[in-house]
Structure formats: C-alpha cells, structure tokens
Length: 479
Image (tube, rainbow, N blue to C red; front, side, top):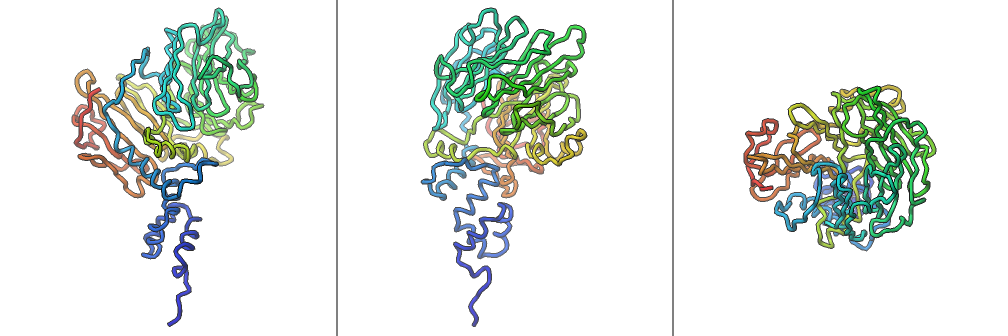
C-alpha cells in the first residue's frame, strides 16, 4: 500500500499554517470540506483567532503584550462577545449630573469617562466610568468662568478627549473672532504635546456673527464647524469647517465652506473616519481626504440621501460595554480596536410627528471608491440600500454605536416609565454563524441581510407598530 502524499496527509501544524493565509470566510468554508480540515480548525487557536478578529471586523493594535498566549487572547475575544449578552440592566451606582439637554452631544462617554458641558451655566465635568488600563482616571469640575477666562468672550463648544488628556474650548471674541484653547484634562496647564496654547481660526471671509459652533477631534486632528447667519438671506446660512493638526501647528489652511438651506438647527455636523477621512453632513454626505493638511480637503465622493435631512447629526461613538472592570477583560481592550473601514456610524434627522429618522450606515462604502467617484454625485439607490438601514423612532429615544453593534432604547408605557433595550449586531461573523447568544428567557430574532437582532428586552409591543415583526417576550425594565 502506497503512503499518502496528498495535501491532507500533511502534519496538522503545517495544515494550520497554510490555512492561516486564507481570508476568514475561506477558512470557515474549509471546515465543511472534510473532517481532517475541520479537526485542524478546531485544534488550532491561531485559526480560530483569525476568524474571530476578522469576523468581528477588528484590528490588532501593534506593539501589544505578546506574552499572552493566543489561546488566552481567543478566549478574551469570545468573552467580550458574551459580555454584550449579559448586560445588567440594574444600575450599580447613581451619579447626579446637572445637564440642560440629556439627549444632546454635550453628554458623551469617551475613554472610559463621562464628559458633560452645560452651556447655559458655563460649567463642565468629567469623571471615570470604566477607564482603560492604559489611561489614567480623571475627575474634575469646571465652575462658571473657569473654562475660558478671556474677557468679553463667549464659549461656543467644549471638547474633551481623555485618550489624549486633552480639553479644547472654542470661544468667540467680539462676536466674530474664534479661538480654541488647548489644555490638559488632569490639571490647569497647557497640553505638553500641543503646538501652542491656542488654535487660530481663519476669519478672513467672515462678515457676520458666529452664532454656533461644533468642535470634534480624532487623533492628531481637531475640527471646528461654524455657522454664520445672514440677515439678508433667511432661507440659507453660511458654514465653515476648519481642521488643525493640533500637535504640529496652531494655524491651518485646511478649510471647507459653503451655504445650505436653513433646515439645520445648529452648525453643519461632521465625523472623522479614521485618520485621513472626514465626512461632512449637509443636504447630502460629502466625503473628503484630509491627508494633506497644507491644502483644502480633497472631495472624494458625494453620497446623495433619499430625502432632505432636517437637523442632521452624526452621533459620537461610545466605549465597548463588552470590556468590564475585570483586569482580564480590560487587557483585551488594549489588543484590538474597531476597523474604521468596516464599522458603523449613526446619523439622525428630525421627522414629522415628533419622530426621528435614524440611518445606520456601514463605513465600508466610504472606502470602496473608484477614481471617478468625485466626478458625479452617487445616487442613493446605488449605495444606500446595501449599506444602510433606516429606522423611525419616537423623539425620546437613545441610541449608541460601538464598532458593528447598535445598542438602543425605546420608551414605552405611561409617561415613558419603561423602555425597550435592544442590541443589534451587524458584524459578518454574527450572521455567518447565526450566533444568537442570549440570556435566560430570551431568544434571537429576525435576520436583516447584514444585520442580526441579538437580544431585546420588552413585554408590551402593540404600542410600537414599526417593531411588531420582531416580537419576543422578556423583562420590562424601569427607568
């Protein structure tokens, strides 16, 4: 009898090494070819780790701790997934927060910290929730007049960035000239990595009063969106968006501007997509490259929306609730992060009858572009249906995005005394494996192409007709 010399006769370690060069979907396909390849997969933590990382659309952070065995990293990844399905709906601590708009962008969770700014009182606060192990815990309160001490000035927006230990305060002097002060979150001092204490804005074309502004940042970039109201053109308003490399220079030539119909309540909103791309939300979605900060951002594409947007906003991302306070779970938080080219963003726009339209959009569409994308606007039917899900919510709702998961609440009952808590998983692995991990008494429901409802907690559903196809039984949670 001749000895076997085929591919399947190779040692299991060699088979595993060869399979590791395949995309994760092909690895999963190989497991259904024969028992030998399936056993190779089940015996290899490396192959299973590749599938988990790619299937959850995560990126491994370079220079992480290599002392943790691959089998332990695999288990930490799976523990993270299970943590999303073991959410404790009972608060473990109550913290009083003085706020003027609970649903506004002025209250966010970032870097394991709760950040809040109260514009009418000119106060701000930050305190630790679940900080990551690589970051320090910060707890501060700013009293009126301490955020900015420049005479005859008015604060426009406050941006806190715990990951960079940065607080940026945008303020206007004499109703027109805008500055941005940069400081350290953990003390009353200049930021040691900033190019200067103050960023200077471009006011060369400003002939009107700056009424509102919005400040955001990511990595080395800070951007300020400003609104100018022209009394002679009540149906339009002018906007300007300026981007700085705050670690390199206090000035910037990276400026966008334009005019839009007066359907937007505040300034034009925007969001960073990774390090070098910026999405600006006006009547449509305009994608720019900010790789070269010495010039005006380059338009990459314009994505047309299906309807005019009323007061559109791009919601900030939250930290991953899958990382708890346990050291082994926090260790995983420093090993991987969401892939900016394959994650979700959330846009909201006001609708009729006190409701809100919510657009859940996959960022993959903003990176899969051809050279002709900027030549002509892309119609909604060419990009929207395959990359977007639209929901109509009552006005009093809350929604948060993390990576490829959506966590949202919907009020029900008398005086909104109860709410539905629902988790949606858009990651490819959740759909591929039909993984509906759930807690006792609950079940996974309803597949939607590239979305999967994982769990939801509710009892009364008849008052929300839009959600009737996904009815399940569960627990009703008090607010």
